[in-house]
Length: 100
Image (cartoon, rainbow, N blue to C red; front, top):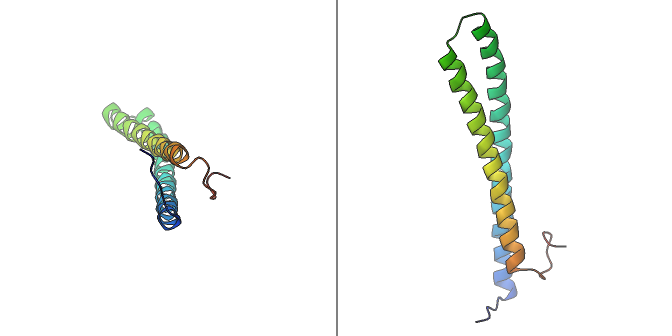
């Protein structure tokens, strides 16, 4: 059955979509900052490990935290792409900033 959407509902949907994308982008920025910070920690931990000041377990835990942060960033980017694809499937010909 065909779904009809009036202009008012469409405008609301566009605003919500834009807000959601903005929130995800802010999350990505936060994750990127955390990843950079963890990378710096790993660099310091490597130096300390070579000096026998920290254990291998501590080094590996920090590396794991770094890689988990990178994966969360990738997941957030993938989520944005999925939302965009869903949006374009639903509104392939609707004129707005996302599909011009």
